[in-house]
Amino acid sequence: MTPFYSVIFLTLFAGLSMPVGALIAHLERIQPFWLENELKHGITAFGGGALLSAIALVLVPKGVESFAPWSAVALFLAGGAAFMLLDIQLSKHKTSISQLVAMLSDFIPESLALGAAIALGGSDAFLLAALIAMQNLPEGFNAFRELKNASHYSATKIIVSFALLALCGPLAGSIAYFWLSEWPTAVSGIMLFASGGILYAVFQDIAPQVVLKKHWAPPMGAVMGFVLGLVGYMLTQ
Image (cartoon, rainbow, N blue to C red; front, side, top):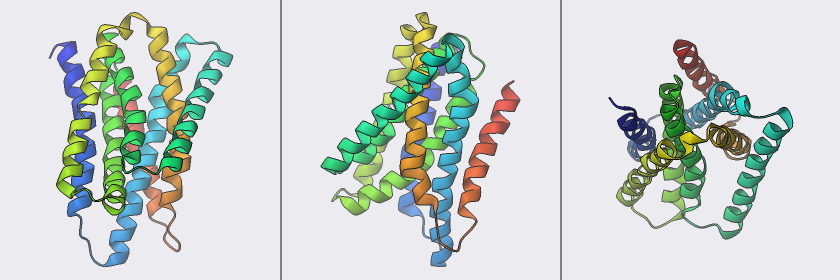
């Protein structure tokens, strides 16, 4: 497979986990209720763990290679601040597409980083694609449930919308492959910026949803998500 086709395949693979997560949320019916509730919280925690592993094992280590400490810190903080401002605006307007915007706000920078990584011959491309997919699956799961409860859209329309959004991955990856690969410093900056934003999202949106009183299994989902990223990281080194 040529590098360009790898960009298309891997970014599309990562993006399609969003509609797959939505489909699982639409079909899942588990009894008794406590087990269904615990599974939902566990899936959310798994996504958070996968996100943290992407930050700790891929995005930040690769991002800091091109920057001095203070520059890296500034980009990381800028990413967190940008996601915070986006979160504030979405909270004010309470639109039915806010969850879709939130998903794209981390999927697009990650797809840019993935496309550039393939262009530069990085060995972490498959790991990064797997981590993005692991993160998008629970995001699609949770976004579907929230959109279904807060809007009049049918399940089919939401799932199809998520599938169309997955095409943003190949588009962003192709842009990075053909243009950003000539500026590896810009790619490193995108990784650091996205890392700050993703970390903000983990503790603002994901972690608070994991807590389930008198249940201790869901947080283990976060541990499992991180471990899966760790195994992938060690296999690629």
